[in-house]
Length: 525
Image (cartoon, rainbow, N blue to C red):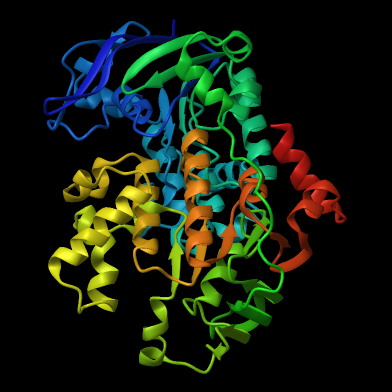
């Protein structure tokens, strides 16, 4: 047995986040740990490497045995040897896991230097191999990049490269494909599966995507509210689930959009020939020799009550497009919001419109202030844009917003680090919706959520849209979610729109080969 977890409990104060669970992992197998956000999956994974915030976290009971050695009682110097060499971990939120002050080369090189003593040209060669292996295009050009210069998917791939650098015996993959588009998701999962078979590496896969589990895991463990409610062979779990909660997870899927929004609704946001070009500078004098065309001549129109879905691989320009529309990224071309040209506005002129244009970012943890309570985070926009509200009225708006996204309003006094990834995403949605905007850019708003909560959030977004006539730009790599909420779909690659059309037409009869490849990858998983 490679890893054995016996009677493990994890407490935070008097609250048990994990309650007496038992599971094991054999060499070379993939075990999936599934369950809703907050069920205890990530807490269990962090316990294996003792990464919880001790002494706030404690273990009332249990053992975690690696080749018979109890990691819960191992000295710190022994844990440093185990972390990264024997057991490696891919974290759910790469932006907060990567050092913002270090380049890609330095971050991957650090783990090679610490565990293998590999430095210089030898390390550089290995780093390039790893980046190529995880699908980073032109890896040599990315060695000097910092995390903020990469897309969400590219950051996730750098994290995977770091984890695989020392070919560990056990890889803990905590939502390893959350930020990846479907084609790269399939590539990464097949890569992990190949490495598992070739190297005899075991994988603990934590995910909310049951399609991935069905294809890549040999065994499944199902968690609910800190307890392990069911475990067994993957085929048996999917074909004959015994526990009611397991059956609930398997049946949860976002339903198709019920009907279409009015075709002649007023236009809220329009862009014409929108371009975002970043200069490429070389030489001693740093002269501009070319441009990276992140968004290259995009036209779009979003009407009241409509959702335009934007899909494409990581780095295709989806998020940059959304930021440009909100004037959070400089651009060229026409941007018109409610019949008012935004390109002509500067600074204070834009500020009154900020309330009506909101965004939900892809990585909720890095976009939430860790020093502010959830109540202050959600209410910050009200303080800026609706300063005339009394304290009682503002508090009521905050409570209503949290309740709408499925969070207990009593948790508003807690801080972001006290919530699971999915719960943090809901906080981010509440922060955007509390101002009752007209246009919202939703950048992967359900990427960190399990399927059952995804369906709830999609229903919530639909309800808010119908009630307030909201216009959405919905950016996602999850085509099942895009189909469930979008009226129109834009397919982007390399900054350009390759195909656009009615959502049903795109999904039933795609015209472009790239669109067909995206759909095949999404619905084969």
